[in-house]
Image 1 (cartoon, rainbow, N blue to C red):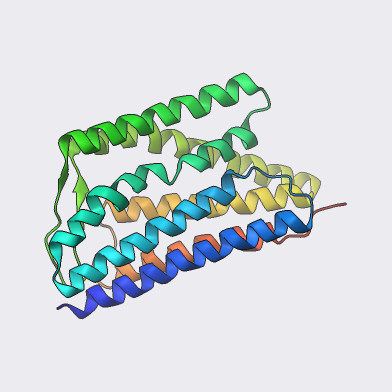
Image 2: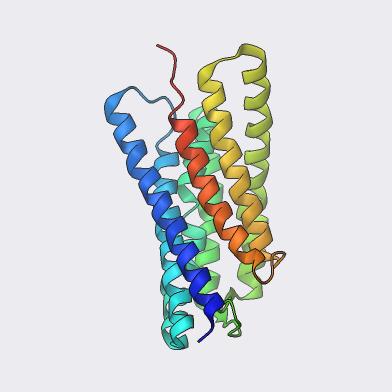
Length: 234
């Protein structure tokens, strides 16, 4: 049993729990006062938390040496949820970027279609089990699924994040509007998470640095919380 896998499991599990706590906190805020931003943020955090909790459980099975259970969770939970958990983000950015319903539907529909393609190829062509290391395993989807995801989902949503990030920053600096500041904060959290995905996918944080990536997941969730708690104007 590798101690690093236990560390990885614990930090990842806590990251998921933090995200779920933020999800419930956002729900409480909606009951207390009028909330102007899309519920896509809320449900993204819900699926975000569930994903990372399952990742923590999967890596815990690595630590126990139960690699069959590790792959079962990857094949039926964390693998598919890698694509599913960002779907609520499509609705958030459609709300934030577009005023016309037609443009929103086109944006959401194209990304959901890309997600469905990812799921189809994921289940159709399978995954590559990761080799057990000190920090656990890292299964990956087949090459076709990875290409479909990058081209049809990740790059478009990354472009949406960057566009809205700088647009909201410009508006906030110009108007000092609290709502613009709040939305800018959400976009910053999404951008951090997208950066984490790049580091994780390209294995740019090997060894103990992997824990920093997992901590980044927590930081992203906390930025969502801090942004949601900015007092909005009457």
